[in-house]
Length: 371
Image (cartoon, rainbow, N blue to C red; front, side):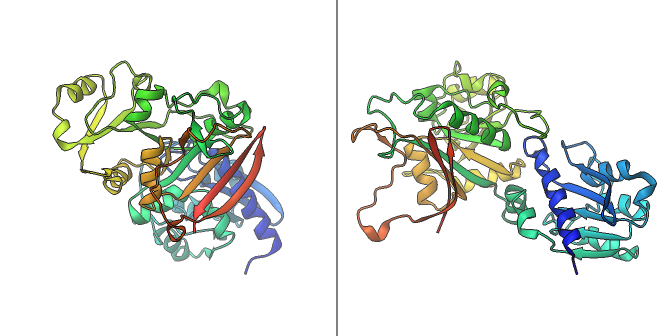
């Protein structure tokens, strides 16, 4: 049984875990609190892959006061040697008496084993406290471990009449600076950003996180890397002079027959990763692409693409969250739509559920999921 105090301690652990929202990739975001009754004697969060886990940081702060204490951790403590020793063993050696784990780790190398180790050592283990809040910390990690695919966020910026650009293609700065800053933070939370070659050719985006545009990120750990930049480009048409290629860390998905082309090899010479996958008359095989990104350890994928690729993700029901930034402007009936979806009857409409709605500067931000 959990008490009000237990819930408060786990809530604090979840708050700590969020501090790693820009920096833990590809590891999950985890927070830990060590308490003696109402008094917190140690707390910590996982900051970066390869560095100490949340439990180890909290135990280091608690020192000898960990003996007989209760540990609150947002994810089951690991039981295996990875880049760091197992946290379950560290908790056992510290002498803690109880452990509350919000959720079980779905990683097959861990799942249930960490809690079993604790129980075998005589530690009282409680599962499920604030589980739903803890799951929200790591939707991508949880999905990749259970399905092999990343969590997909589709980002759109549109006018009141649902347009992303003028008919000429002119599109810059539909939304205001506050919304653009919010998108930078969304990028920083992502392991990878996907776009199509059409967007590369039309807009020449960099697809980077610009630290000077993130603003004050509070107690969050500073981002330590750029997301992987992913391009869906059947014929390897991405120009070698594209901004997206600057700084490297680019992976291009093309048709299998295009991998050996001169254009593809020019890109490979610049350090671009190349993978040949299936393409259909409707476009890239998104399922195969997502499987490949999952194999590369991508937990959270941000799709910033034109209407064709965006429409394909919606059509194939592969969007976990739709982030729509709506500006208080009209771009006119000839402007470009947010997504190409050739629907003809009301029965074909794609219904969404609003998860969050808020004002970001002069723009409205909606986070939606498919009904």
